[in-house]
Image (cartoon, rainbow, N blue to C red; front, side, top):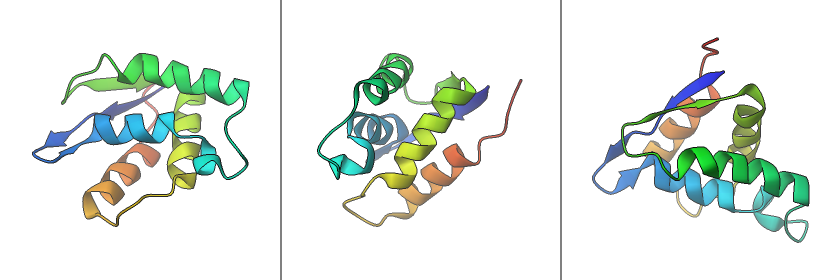
Length: 98
């Protein structure tokens, strides 16, 4: 299990950025879209992220954490922003909690 904190500041909300990443096909659909099993994994993440509020901590099982880190690593960001890099590093570097 890994825990991530959905930090927020004016103009930047981890939850909003993560929702965009999770909803996008892996590698932004470079292979034409998303497969059913990947969609199921996305929905498991959405079920945890959508009801969360800024500042909430979200527990992710190892499979969910692995899926979101793969999506983060392959996502094609439209901008370069230190806050995005910080968020991604925090999620990828989340320590196992139990």
